[in-house]
Amino acid sequence: QVQLVQSGGGLVQSGGSLRLSCAGSGRTFSDVAMGWFRQAPGKDREFVAAVSRGGEIYYDDSVKGRFTISRDNAKKVLSLQMNSLKADDTAVYYCAATSRIAFFASYGYLSAQKSYAAWGQGTQVTVSP
Picture 1: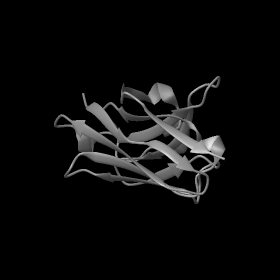
Picture 2: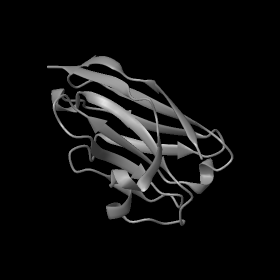
Picture 3: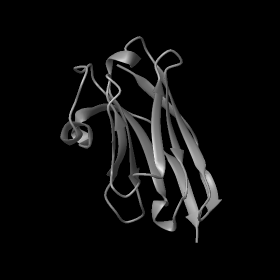
């Protein structure tokens, strides 16, 4: 199973940018799908973006066009570039990895928290108005 360690995040003004990284360990990094979720104060954790083993990319509508997910299997790193940040993006962000999975996976599968077997420790992103 993949172990995940997150970095990045912090405080930024509205309209600014931040980049989150998630370093994976273990030999199966390229065999899993990866995703980002977030949890705002007082709200449930929600899907942000995901990338399958085959490179399919999915975004929640709230971040489409502003956030970019990417993965580097050679370096075992998952990234989330966040541009045009809004106050509503303030949350703790989590990276996640599925167990070994087929090459392609649907939006419905990768947007569900129950599809993921490993989680990062979470990192705070705060966007000031």
